Image 1 (tube, rainbow, N blue to C red):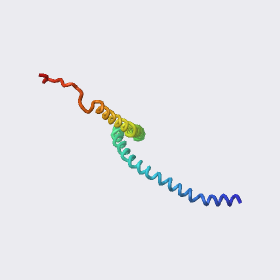
Image 2: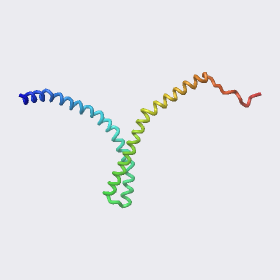
Image 3: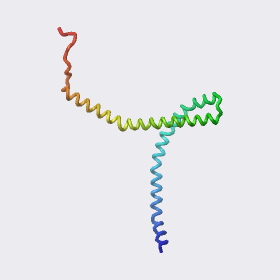
Image 4: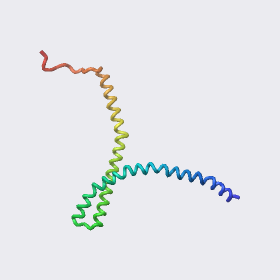
Length: 129
């Protein structure tokens, strides 16, 4: 009796689980496209930066295994630096830029209102005659 109830419940829940799995995978598709859009140029940058270093390591007579290990370490370090830079750019664009723009606009509005829209500096110059 209990087993038949469990089977019946599992048969009713199985299509819902299947739909949730498909919807979950559909969520990852835009993320994958975004990572591909950002990741491929990032890999190109890393390759362009690391290729001369790998060439010089190979010229200095290091074994190919050490050249590849050092190149991998250098590419990993460059990737870490670029990742930190991307985080800093995101914070700057989302937090710092709007605050700076609001500060500039508010200071511009209040400075104009405070001065009355005219220049209050005294007229002193060479034609005082």
